[in-house]
Length: 177
Image (tube, rainbow, N blue to C red; front, side):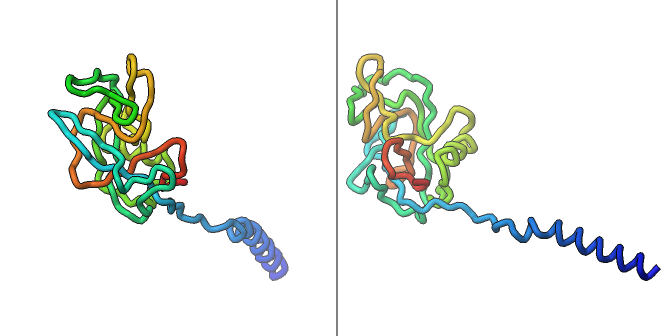
């Protein structure tokens, strides 16, 4: 009986060690954080039911201008192909976004680990069809067929004296870069 007990104990110990080896060898899961400066915009103009978020003297669309440790709202956009309102003439530098903008509650840039994460925040707060606004969302030209940059008009309301996280698709100026 002692021999059987000893064999059983040894077999269980061996089995347990084999099970624990992969767990001990697996690396600990690291928390992913964004740490690159991100590009930010502010409101530079507004009208009746429309607002113009834009780059300004602080904005750096090439390398980002705000540390990822900052806590700011994400600028969200829902493109609905809305026509250009009277009184707005879209240009390359100040286009028409063809929709509505809104801002999320402030989030720390370190949480913006990918563009998809930022888009998901917009969907979380405003619903399907919303995404993070991008530097080139302003449209101009015949049938708004051309994309500009630096600024755009859109329907909506945004708080003044606030900076917003805005994406850029062709530079390393996003917190996730």
